[in-house]
Every structure is written in C-alpha cells, then in structure tokens.
Length: 136
Image (cartoon, rainbow, N blue to C red; front, side, top):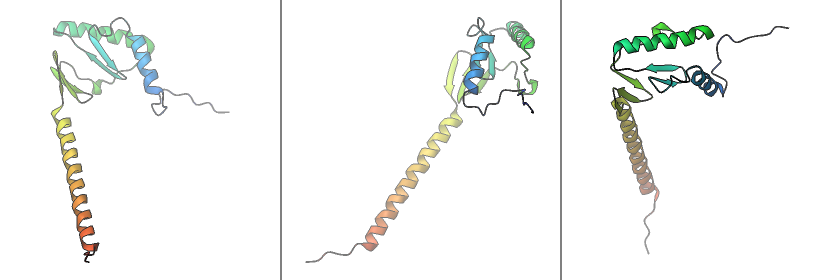
C-alpha cells in the first residue's frame, strides 16, 4: 500500500487557511501586534527605523528556521514606505482604500445601471410594438 504525505499544506482543503492562520498566530505569539501583522501567509513587519526593521526580520527568521517554515525571497519586499494589502493602501499611520478598487467598483455599477436602463428600453419597445390600441 502506498501512503502519500503532503510536503506543503494543501489549501484546497476547506479549513486549511484557518488552520494555517492559527499555526502562524501560535508561532509568532508575543511579538504579534507589537511590530508585526499576519494574514495567512503574509507577514508584514513595520518599524520607524531601518535598524529596528533589520532586527525584527532576524527575529522572524529565527522563529521560522527551527520549524522548517520557508520564506520565498522573490515574494519578499523590503523597506517599502507604503503597500497594498487586501484592497487597502497602508502607509505609516494611514489606511486608505486603493483608488483602482474604487474605480473598478464604480465602473461596474455604471455598467450595471446602463444594462438595466437598456433592458428597460428594450422592454418598453417590445410592449409598444405588441400592444394593440384599445378603442370603444
């Protein structure tokens, strides 16, 4: 009998993201929310000084190494002043909605309204052509 063992967490399983989030919260318990934010597999480290940031990165890596949690260097960004996460622009102490997301929603609403008005005009034209004049 052949036994298959996952080497990575299969995110196709319904409860996998919640399970992974709970695992990450447990690993980084104590430093979480001091200078770090987590969302599933995204780690955001924030600080006022670059020296502190380097120290925090070292702490995060030292927690990941013993449990064989790998970090992809090509997916990492260092020293950013602002970033986009979950449709929000985060910079310093401010949080703003991404303008591209707002424009996409407004464009979608405009298209839906336009489609509804076209549908109403089509319906009106159809009933106008098929209705017979009533005379007494």
